[in-house]
Length: 257
Image (cartoon, rainbow, N blue to C red; front, side, top):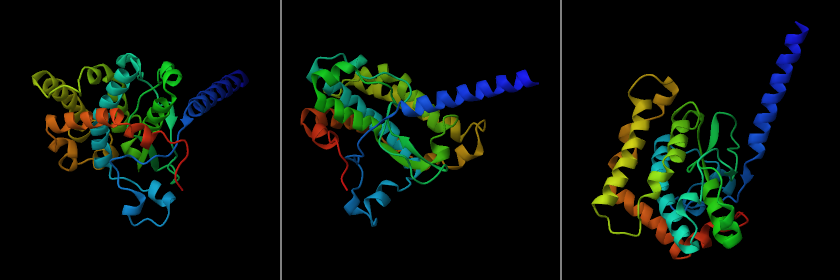
């Protein structure tokens, strides 16, 4: 019995170390509002902290995870062209390495990433530190959502895996080319896989009720967006970099107060 107790304590200690290491591995990033979001001055919030801690509609948050993923694709393409670094190695899939903030609202509300990818190619930091900082802040951006919209075992985790697994497919879309048949098919295939992920948590009945209750396919913007509209979101990301606005907005090293 004593031996079993020591083994149990050793396993528990190892588990705590693993969790602590994973948490510590996330590098804090600057809190920067998304260019597509409303600003602090637009809303009824008395302080910037209240603005940052607002809880988003889960349907809008999940829709944004596809829309911004296309934008992210355009951003990566433009950075690759600007720096001559391979587009397919700029970021890796995997656990999030960067995070701008915690929810500040307890365990029932998570600060959920819009984009969930792993590391950034170190060569980008050596070649263009401003672009590296901007990309780090973009990837670290989070929105406050109910835990059920972000839990690893639920729809949030499924979208996390989708975003990491589909980087190659995202990289095959040319956001600086005309929207021809090839681009349309590539966007359609990507969005169909995303919608399949959502449908699995709304219709098939094999997932937790808490997951299904927060989702309403009729309220998801992505189900109303045509391939051309999503392609243009990627083009907007591409133009954001080439115009210099990406660095100007996301390249800050301190948050506004």
